[in-house]
Image (tube, rainbow, N blue to C red; front, side, top):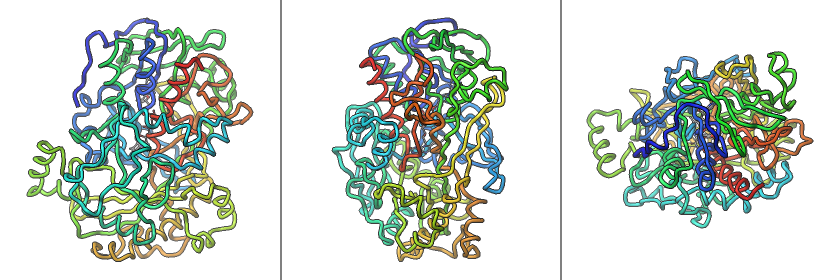
Length: 586
Ligand SMILES: Cc1cc2nc3c(=O)[nH]c(=O)nc-3n(C[C@H](O)[C@H](O)[C@H](O)COP(=O)(O)OP(=O)(O)OC[C@H]3O[C@@H](n4cnc5c(N)ncnc54)[C@H](O)[C@@H]3O)c2cc1C
């Protein structure tokens, strides 16, 4: 999309004063900044730049979100892309074969919305109720949050002529969407043939199409999911192409400091007064906040920035000679990272990736994309199913795991299945992955240096609770049921590729899971929202940091737990909600 930025909106390095300083121009940051700038002066400070300039088409063309494995490659051998990705590495995962993982996170305007896979789904009514109960604030129920989800989006109905796939007509509840927000949400202008078969397979095992889709508060069955996509151009929508564009086009009150790193939040008498910034690694200057500082640096960097600024577990800060502003033991302590595992087979159907990799077919695919905003290059978000484990399978799980699942709300799915297709260069693999909806394992983020330029220490805590391994073993059994259905058998070309027929017993499946599990990049809850008395709580239900004034955290880090579904819709809605609260003087 076009980048519109006038000379007077480009911020110059040097001391300056604004009503609000937003740290991080990512998904939440640009959303809240754009809304606050409707009535106040706002500065956004972002460590990265414009991804369209720094990274070309890779983040713009939807299909690239699936094949740009260089950005999202979870191994330590990932190709380096410092101008879009923070290149974070985790601590060895002691319960997952000591694997060290690359955890992609956007370092660019748009943040992780600039490199995610664009699925737009919300969560279930019961999960929102649990959120409201846990933080003691009924404004977090589904009905009360819905206006903020609606406010952020502009829904365009699917283009059935371009999709041209009778088996893939999206069903959804139009009343759950708005059409006045900056963020385009729509469906792909092309449907991947392999996915239509895998969708049929998931339906054949009993997960029928949900007529309301994934935005109406019910996560059961299957659906062709919408994505954050501009359907007219078939380009990615990020918080930058939506909210930042909206703000820059409509007012003068927003200044963007890009390629600028915040090294510290500054305090006077426990009130946040501004931030210390360096642009392009040189000039260090102060941006002062007349009203508030809003921290939106994401799930790993928000807790890091709090800690280097003196807010966090006292012992950690003192060991690094960081003066303690607020002793908040919960900072970084409640990390939830939904774990994912795949079951895959070679298939004989075409798919987007195999088509664009074929020199004979690629020119037509390019023509379709450029001239019609359609074809395989326009395709990314696909087919998703949610599942509650059937009683017979549930009964095979260890008693403790059964008890944990039973304590979850009865409409909450345990698993999310995503249909996919991967081109190996010579073969096409049909893949069905399962991700845990409510992860029980807990990880943490901490620091080993007071310098913001050092990486935060990230322990995902995978399988620290064995229930997650048990649920994924059951997930593989469910996905094998899907592959045994007639539609999946029709496209199968050979035996199971992953985990492979040799993995049969629960022990063998668990071994496969520990060696091959992947992240979904949905980590959350490192600065969890909660009641003041909760030991893990870092912010209250208005996102204000406990123990100080003038500082809120607004991003994935404040979710109280891992919400079933896909998170970006909630990050946008949460930023809308807190912006609204701030404007109302709360
Ligand atoms: C590969 C991948 C695929 C995903 N797929 C999906 C999907 O299909 N659907 C979905 O719903 N969700 C998906 N997600 C998750 C979703 O995109 C994220 O949860 C969400 O974007 C997080 O938003 P945020 O505002 O918390 O953080 P971010 O959007 O990451 O923003 C944080 C920003 O802060 C900046 N920053 C950090 N530290 C500093 C500092 N010290 N100074 C200045 N700036 C700083 C960063 O550069 C970044 O721009 C995916 C994520 C990834 C990584």
